[in-house]
Structure formats: C-alpha cells, structure tokens
Image (cartoon, rainbow, N blue to C red; front, side):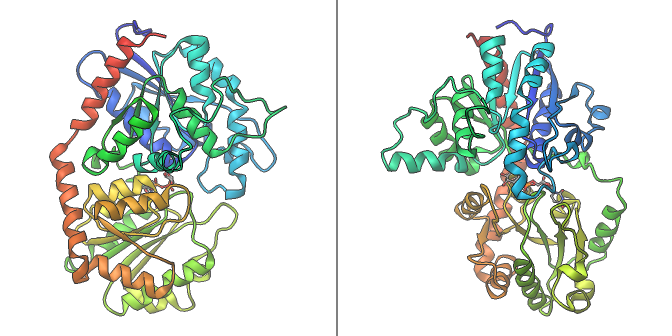
Length: 449
Ligand SMILES: C[C@@H]1O[C@H](OP(=O)(O)OP(=O)(O)OC[C@H]2O[C@@H](n3ccc(=O)[nH]c3=O)[C@H](O)[C@@H]2O)[C@H](O)[C@H](O)[C@H]1O
C-alpha cells in the first residue's frame, strides 16, 4: 500500500485514557520518529486535552510527534478535567468508557482529516479500527501496553474449558448504539479489539521473559504478535527534572550511606490502598525500620479523597521512622529512584510499566497487586523469578516478604535473577524495537484490504 504522506509513514496513535497506556504509546512514538533509515515516521498522538496537557512539551524534543485533541462530551460527574483515569474514582470508569465511545464521530473526523497510513490503537475503543478500516481502508495495529501473559490467560481458560474454538465471541459488525446497547464490558472491548487488528499486533514486552505467552496469544488470535521491548524511557528523557519535589527526594536518597538498603513503594497512577491496607503496610515498615531498613513511600489518593501523611499513616508513624523513611505525597520520580544505587527493593502494585521498569533497573519486586491485570503481572514476576507476591496485606506477611526479597538469604536467587534480566536488557539494547519497526514498515507496505 502506497504511503499516504509523501515518502514517510503517517501514524495516528490512539491510546486508552490512562497514564499507564499513554506513556508506553508515547515511548513507541519516540522510537518511530527517531528511526534513521527511510521511510521515516510522522506520529499524531490523539487523546483528551487533560491527558495531552501532561505531555505538552514533547514536541520540543520530538517535532515529528504532533498532539491531536479529542473532545469527549461532558457527562454528569465527568467534566473535561476528568477525561483521564489519573486520580479518577473507580466508580466513574464506566462513565469514562461511555464518554470516549460518544466521541467516536469526532474521532472519525480526525481520521478523515489526517488520513494516516496506519492507526495504532488500544483495547478500550474497538470502534476505532472499524471506522479506520471500513470507511478509509486504513490498516490498524493493536498495541498491547500490558503483558502478553494477561492477554493469553482468558484464551487459555476458555480453551481448557472447550469454549474457545478460535471464533471470537462477538459479531464482527457490532457498532456502538447507546439507544439499544449498554456500554460494552471490558472483556468485550478486549476481544473485539483483538479481532479488529488488521493483521499484526504489538506488545510492550520482550521474548526473554514472555516468549511462550507472546506465541500463545499469536496462536490463539491467528495474527503476528510482535514484542517492542520494555519501552522504558531513556534516562535523558526524565520528564520531572523541573520539579522541586524531585530535588527533595533525590537529596534524601543521595545522603544515604551507600550500604543502606532503601525500598521504594508505589502503586501507580490509578490504584489506591484502603485505609486498612495503609495501616498494615505502615506497621510492616515500622517493624523493618527498627531493623535498619529505609524506604520511600509514594502516597496517592483519588481526587477529592486526599489526606495528609499524618492522617493517612499509623499513629506516630512519621516520628517513629524519622530519617529512615521518606513519604512522597502524590508523585515521585520513579525511574530516577529505581536506578539509584541504594534502592534494593520495589514494593509495587505491578502495573505493567512499573514491572518493566523494575526489570530494566534490576530491582527485585515485592508484588502487592490491587486491581486489573496487576494480579497476572504479579504471577509473571514470580514465574520469571524477579520477585515475590505477598499473599495478603497484613503487617507480618508484608514485613516477611520485604525482608526476604531485599536482604534474606532465601531471596538471594531473586536478586540474582533481577540482575540477570537487567543485564540481558542492557545487552539487547534496541534490538527488539528495531525489529518491530521493520515489521511495521513491511506491514504498511504490503497491506491490502
Ligand atoms: C498498563 C496499565 O497501566 C495502569 O497504570 P498505572 O499507572 O497504575 O501503573 P503503571 O503501568 O505501573 O504505570 C505507572 C507509571 O507512572 C510512573 N510513576 C508512578 C508513580 C509515581 O509516583 N511516579 C511515577 O513516575 C511509573 O514510572 C510508571 O511509568 C495500571 O497499572 C494497569 O494495571 C496496567 O496494566
């Protein structure tokens, strides 16, 4: 198929409205536009204005990445500043799905106006590939920002129960019609998006840890699934070096004696501990602090439920831990912290970007999954051998697993494996992403409806 935009390839990218999806898409866009050989790429990244505001300066460094606003309708409790999952109350997620669905006609206008050579889309808006392919004959690639394992699981379960014979459980001409249909479920959206991808999918993963799961998904859906590597931003791309809060936490970390083991604790941009879970984790850290362990804990709350550390943490917690603990309210420079020499463990909800960052920097993971695919990501962390999952969030169990993973004799294998995966990623460099981009070019040039 002849590229539409001169001799280059014009790509429209359309991630789901979550921080943990937009950033992997943005990393993929950076790799595409940085390609040296012909054809070059030009990327349009489409999202809500509130999401694009958080990456607005990307064009300073990457002029071939253009941001395209998609205006979702304002719905009850969902004004424009809430057209993102960051800080969104969980009960508003279905409303956000619906608002995005209702923007499909504006998206169709964007498609027609830009007329890209390729649409790279996400799981939650399966109407997008239908619009691209049926009216404009634009090929679509689904980019899975989650682990291949979490996509393979439902198919494996259905196959084992004999309910999956390769036919997708959705009529292929199903379009959104809110007069007659309720908003499609998460599962329906995933299956439908997998079916609608033109002929190739990308996955934010790498064969060293997921070859079997990548091949399994490929076999189930009958399309090539191509890994793009961990897609962890280059150190030079830290987007937080302007903030005073960054200096404070890095100063605290840099002043630590190099022999001090520091544990970094964070639960991503859209998952939150309950009050009881914060209490249990806090008590576990009090136990470990008396044994000399230090930690950085990122405290985040859904919008409107914010509280200060003194109210959010156990009675007397801050006084008891003193200089051994740093509580960062709202946000912390996660990648900068994870690659610091003193960081010896990562207590994580196992959002997929956090897992790949832990692996990139060789930090063993204490898995505390809270929702979505985090449970399957935690299982994968144990399967690969780079971490251990807490069985329940109570002070004894959490303290036991942190101590085991970070310093315990029995955790030594985990620490060795975490360093091995890090070294393998360093050695592989950009091999997988370069191969994936070559496959994408071939796909665009040979696609025919
Ligand atoms: C794909 C999907 O992403 C979602 O996003 P979420 O933000 O929760 O978690 P991450 O994927 O770890 O993404 C979080 C991203 O925010 C960065 N960060 C986070 C906290 C902080 O204080 N500072 C930071 O820099 C972190 O470095 C990472 O890049 C869900 O998990 C979902 O389970 C997962 O499959």
